[in-house]
Amino acid sequence: MEKLKVAVIGCGSIAIHRHLPEYQGNPFVEIVAVCDIKEERAQSAASEYNAQAYTDYKQAITDSNADLVSVCLPNYLHAPVSIFAAEQGKHVLCEKPMATSEEEAKQMIDTSNKAGKKLMIAHNQRFVPSHEKARQLIANGEIGKVYSFRTTFGHGGPEGWSIDGKESWFFRKEEAFIGALGDLGVHKADLIRYILGTEFTEVAAMVESSAKENSDVDDQAVTILRSEKGIIGTLTASWAYGAGEDNSTVIYGEKGMLRLEDDPAYSLIATYTDGSKINYELGQIQTNDSGGQTSSGVIDHFVDSVRNDSKPLIDGEEGYKSLQIILAALEANETKKNITL
Ligand SMILES: NC(=O)c1ccc[n+]([C@@H]2O[C@H](COP(=O)([O-])OP(=O)(O)OC[C@H]3O[C@@H](n4cnc5c(N)ncnc54)[C@H](O)[C@@H]3O)[C@@H](O)[C@H]2O)c1
Figure 1 (cartoon, rainbow, N blue to C red):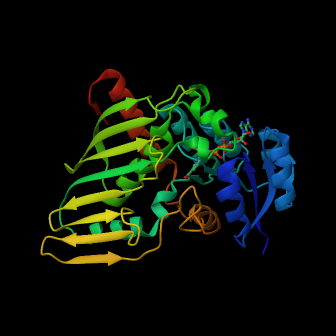
Figure 2 (figure 1 turned 90 degrees about the vertical axis):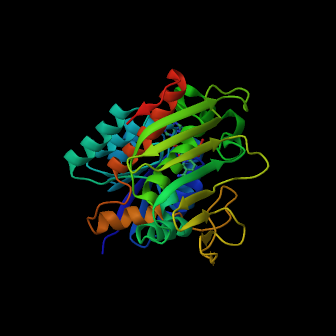
């Protein structure tokens, strides 16, 4: 059977740590092209993965004859590169946040639909075992009616992650458009929609840029969300948790409470109002220090959806709804008013 050919655009940290090794580990894919505006990065990935190096994304996408394109670029390039790739008839896996505006996101969805090709957004939090288990427990009514939640994603900031360290695009509004809220908050927006199986209709937010120097984007955000089912909760994103990562979520329901990624030994702890408690050992979440899960699950899922012609779990519409929440949070902070979705 002929393998699917992939072009990976951007050879920074997410490509190096996730996309490239996970495509390499997938038996149905061959990495044919790698592209980075910094030639030495493209060359280095090309020699490691036996692919062709490019510095121009258009050339990488058209000349390589790729079937799939992974967009691993600064946020402002997500929409233009994904749209170009879909216009060329490619299936697209795009990193998060999907785009910098609702208009861009809609255009990405329309272009992929018109081309009859897949569009998936890399919200890997959905593939974490504790998160998937919590979704099932809630859907099965294990904790009864859900009332409230708190979900947090914070770490010391992208200088400890991006290939350009302190000089990273992550800190420049023109390229990033948004800071911690778009880097980390959007993951939790997507996760909480997924786990609770509900859409959010109202967003309040306070956003600050207080922790980083030489940055013109937010690094602290606390938002309050209300769902169509009347569930209210907080979503927090931060680049100032220098002492350690917090990736936890707690869900409070009528019959019990679920703590996710909040305990070093048990990734899911269910405590019930009748006094019983279940500790689930499901494996740890993947972190930037490359502890925990070895595969994000994102790349294999994307490849499967192309091979089986099935809808990806996080398609463009899903990415769009999660993006809407953080765009609303920015607006709520600016206008000092709750935003209705
Ligand atoms: N899903 C996740 O958990 C997760 C984690 C980290 C980052 N990300 C996302 O991945 C994307 C990339 O982030 P990263 O951490 O790899 O950043 P990075 O700074 O490590 O790498 C970005 C790379 O893009 C290259 N680049 C910039 N402009 C280019 C262009 N015009 N053409 C080709 N290459 C270009 C840079 O030279 C750099 O090598 C971001 O959108 C980020 O939000 C997702």
